Length: 64
Image (cartoon, rainbow, N blue to C red):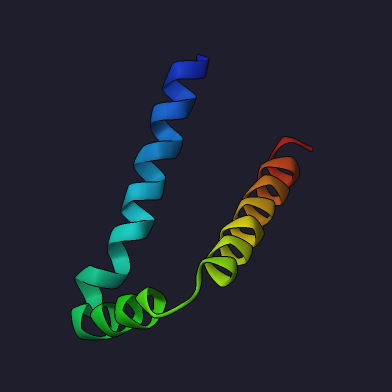
């Protein structure tokens, strides 16, 4: 599998996973978005950073 195919596969999987919550529980998803909208920038940055670290860790596990 080439690099572009792998990238498209990863992006496709990400979109599928991201779409599960709004598809299965749109009301709860909307409430979560409203909660996230009230968070300050620092908290959002920390959450985003933790998500990136978690993703990198999973990628590392998948390669080794």
